[in-house]
Image 1 (cartoon, rainbow, N blue to C red):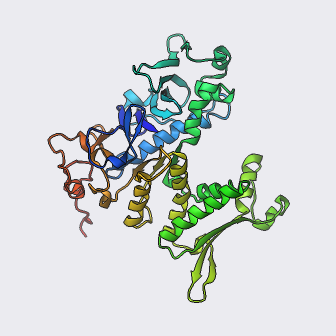
Image 2 (image 1 turned 180 degrees about the vertical axis):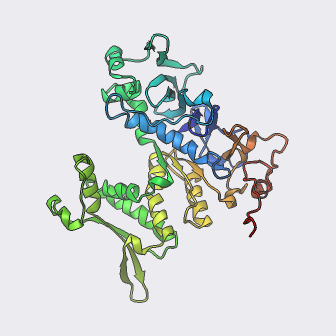
Length: 437
């Protein structure tokens, strides 16, 4: 589970900001918390704020961190996808900083790095074994770029096993030591790498696609029992969402790669073969939404394009949601309310927070403008976070529970207080007008 995320000098984040999922001492809605190790962690966190205040940048920051770890640069010298705070000369040339603390297996890990688009500057990894009385970190490694010498200084802890020098040589200026270690099968580093590759899923508006849900269903093809369960759960979700859909049908169309011209697909010579195969594979998948018409109980098949935006959006989220609750994944969703009725959004959140879930570890971090969710029967105060810009246009991130003088009373109408500007993080508008109009 995710404990906290720290970000500094990335896009609109100038100064270090911390998103913490550690629960406060508040005793309300205890079912919204899960115990991991010595900590009580929140199952869900909602982020509010005016447009252009940095809400989406928070998710982009974690997405960028994951991208650098999992994908890395394709070749030596290739630039990293890092964008520093541009509105200050002091920060625009400095490295951006990313750090996460999370539980995975029998450890709590603290991992982070600093980087510019040209190179990795610092990198560190500490582990805290669970079950010990003293919460003392084990240093696995530290890396620091020395600007004076132009070289990287390394420090390895005795807890890190395996060939350190060989891995160090493979961690080039723009390659993380963690990524190199996972690539070369270092057991300890692979364990940390796996959390980023398997335990955190980020959905941004630019990446909206039904592929995640389709992949979830198609990847179960070789396991008949798993396939039945996956289809069963997706169909139940679609039926209970009141779209009038009885079931979903997904199948691969049969056509050979040489028949691609029939699909009117042309590839640029620069498109790699692996990318071509992935596109062709996607073209072979046929999705149908099946409605059952009464009284004759006749099945009518609809293509995705014939369904509403809300139906397609819910289908996009159904797969990630089921992965989160069945595999204990931390799910981050931007603009969660897009095309969905508030009751549907609320139900999705309650699903993640349900104390009836057998699998531990599911978490949701979402960005929204839907103020109907600011309900003390749905969320604790420490689950509501806000973003707003300071005088220097840097994003500031804070929790509703941070407010002392204006701290909301238990059971208080949070929606009303937020819209009244009690907690800040709302747009300050001037009346629109047409000059001389």
